[in-house]
Amino acid sequence: MINLRNENWVVKHIEKPIYLMVNHKWAFIIWEYNKIKKFIKEHACLVHVDTHLDDVPELVLNQNVILASTPQDLVDIVNYEQGEDRYEPELRMDNFIIPSFLRGTIQDIIYVSNPENKKEATTKEITVEDMSEDANELMLFKCFKLINGQEKSISRFMGVQDFISKTVSFKEKQHEILDLDLDYFNNSLLYRTADLKNEDVIFSDLAALKAYTDWDLITVALSPDFCGEDQDCLYLLELFLKVFDLNLSEFKVWSI
Image (cartoon, rainbow, N blue to C red; front, side):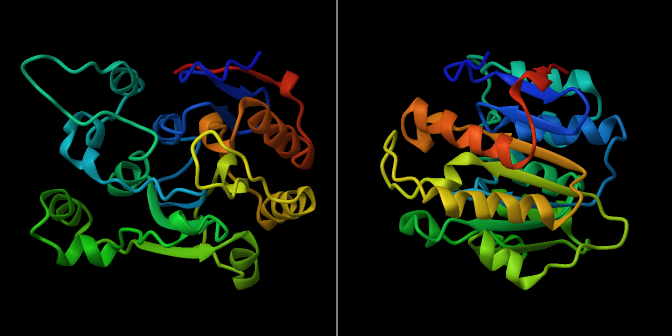
């Protein structure tokens, strides 16, 4: 059922608002589709549990992404192909968060980074202040113009247990999105190389995330090339399904 080489592979649980995907870029499409269909409200809080920040801001320059308002607009974003006479940044696995932040789908971003992956853990995230102050950067200046006057926030925690221990309070009536990349559980700095966390640690972190709140939407990226080999990715997926009391047979192929 799972084709880890198919970057357009996306499935949804038949009853619950839980999505699995190979390529993390689909999270943007899923969040925005759920907002357009009014399954979630605007101004949600995103908890992004991932080795990578995925906060490249370049899609602010793509007006088709920033102004998308219908399911067909989302289809067009996915199917976009660069023409010889024009270039616009494409939706990718590292730039899908900031557009939803700018569009108002997400009001607050909480990054939960893997402290054991030293290279990524020391990467500085883009902050709201960066968007406000660094007007010499065109992309950040455009970001600032879109969020000017809005009460948005970006915060970061080093590890699931750090996040859990701080007991973050969500805003009243704010929808809560859990966005998990399975590569969070891989400590390796090398591409397609695994140094997975201890299974007890993985179970503990997943259980803590599951119990933290009644999530309104969950998106899970398999990111096989960053989990190690394919078997490592499938192993992590198996643990996620087990902790969240899910079965892969309960998921069906999803399309807009």
